[in-house]
Image (tube, rainbow, N blue to C red; front, side, top):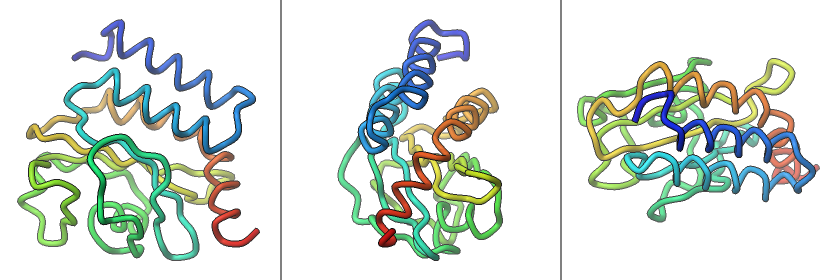
Length: 163
């Protein structure tokens, strides 16, 4: 599905409306991952991790349950993205030594950092069972949404951290 696919554009518009609307943070972020998952059938798992101290904690997600509800910074693709302060696109996760498999079928992954006031507060994490499933348009879409999601993720992370 290309970046100009009507379903993809509609999902982006829905996600942007959720992030700029009046819903509580957790409901808005849940709606975003649901809209993204619905519009991208090849995206087998779509979630948001919140950075709480030096641990990524699983927030809203769509897809098979994962054992990875807490990921230390520096561990796996998600933790490495935070440690290196950059988005990561992995075309074939089986080529990584430090990969934390959410599902045995996962073959590729994209992690896009979510920032608020310059600080990393979370990340979008998306897995696919297809090789090389993510490209520049996907990173750009998630990056746009990450900018809008920053304040919401910061507030949720602060609540999880105890204030």
